[in-house]
Amino acid sequence: MTNERPTACADEAAADRAMPADARMQAIWRTYADPLLRFLQRLSQGRQHNAEDLLQETLMRAWRHIDNLPDDVESLGPWLYTVARRVAIDAARARQVRPAEIAFPDHGREPVAADMFDRVVAAQVIRDALPRLIPEHRSVVVELYLRQHSTRETALRLGIPEGTVKSRVYYALRALSAVVGTTD
Image (cartoon, rainbow, N blue to C red; front, side, top):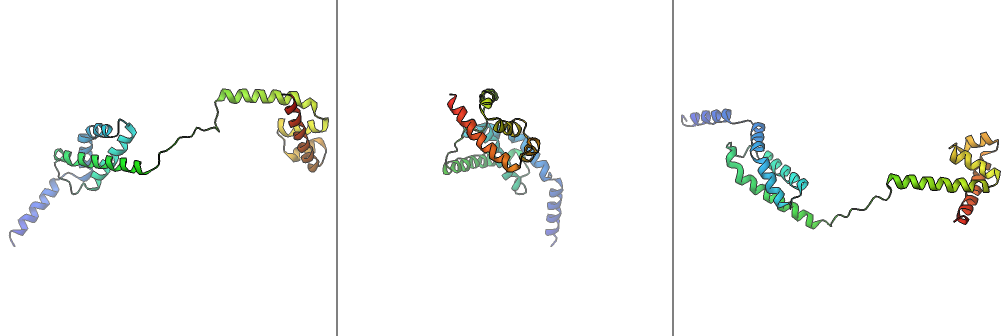
């Protein structure tokens, strides 16, 4: 019985001397982050962002096992490099299983210069075509599209029912399309 008590006291004293987990993790980071990152860059063919992700996963695994790791940070090198290599292998295998990602260009977003040019050309085409419409159609198109009034506002401004505005804009757009199509 007397032998167990000093052992328990010795274990408690050792626990008191041991670094807290977060301090040990900071020491691991300071000691191994840069060398592990260079190692992982070589394993990931120089892709910095992949190497950083692998380093983060390696250090997360160290954090998960921090209580089981020896207190001597300098002795963790072989274990950390083994974990890093296995993490890199797992990531490479995962990429092989997934189909290759293909980046499609975003056609919804064209360069500003092209947008400006297209708007200027479209405005000129419409400006040339508007006088060819009958006055009733032209006034509805001007109110709705150029002045950007609603159907109700257009009806009030022109003194006609909303249904008439809708009918006139329908026929005006058809006529405008026909005029624009013939001017090419």
